[in-house]
Amino acid sequence: MELKGRSISKGQVEAEVIVSKAPISFLGGVNEDGIITDKENELYGQSIRDKIFVFPTGKGSTVGSYVIYGLAKKGILKGIINKECEPIVATGAILGKIPMVDNIDISNIKTGDRVLIDGNKGIVKVFKN
Image (cartoon, rainbow, N blue to C red; front, side, top):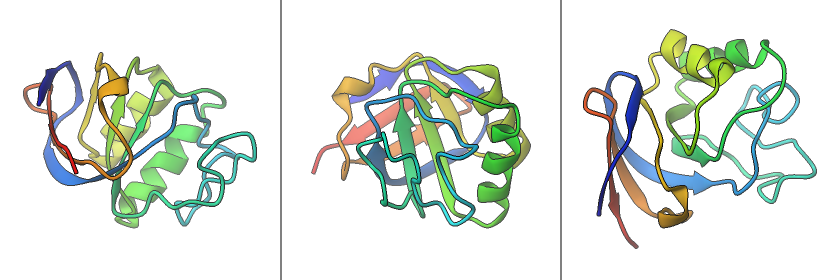
């Protein structure tokens, strides 16, 4: 399945996805090792390491941009797909050179699916498990 969205950060990556149904803050919601630490999130305790992270939108502090950047520098976060991107997540993805696309109906993507993000064209290809 191919979904057309809006390119936020250039680049291409293919990896398994992990999907949060709730918005997430990277400051206090994800630690420096890529573990979800937000106790209110259904992914609490799970890792985004080597995955494409799919979530509706970001929330919270501008410091979240630097958390995303740090995850990119450590090679932990491979890509981001949002229903609606906001400036904090966009800034972190661009600084970290993490391929990112938004304006995607994320209800079509499930944890464990394999996905190709083409941040150059704003396209997400979903390969169902």
